[in-house]
Length: 151
Image (tube, rainbow, N blue to C red; front, side, top):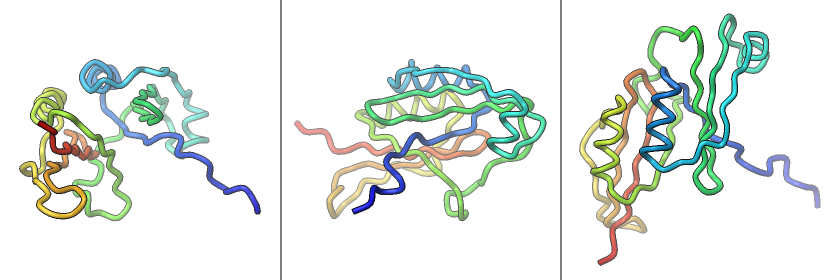
C-alpha cells in the first residue's frame, strides 16, 4: 500500500486589510494563540502567490491542531473578494463557538457583519445548533457554529 499524497491540512488562509487588528480579534477576542508572524518580500510573494508588486505581512494563529494564516498584502489590491458564499471558489472558515451572541458582538467590533439572523437547526445531527455566516468589511466569510448548551 502506498502512502497518501496528502497527509495534513496545513492551514486555512484569510486575506485581511489590517493584520494588527485581525490578530487582536483572533487572539485576544476569539482565544487563538499567535504561533508566529512573518513577512514575505516582493520576490517571494510573486513566486508563491502570483501577485506582483506586493509584500505580505502575515501571522499564523492556532487553536488546538487548527491553524489560520492571516495575510495583509502591501500595497493592498482594490476591490472586494466574492460578495457571496455561493460564488464558485469562495472559501469560508467555520468556528465552533460557546457563546454566539458574544462572538457576534466581538466580530462586529472588528468589521464583520452577519449576513442574516442566526438559524437554529431543527432536525438531524445538529438539532438545536445555531449557525450564521459573517461577511468581512472587505470580503471573506466566517461561519459561526454554536452547539446547544447542556443544562
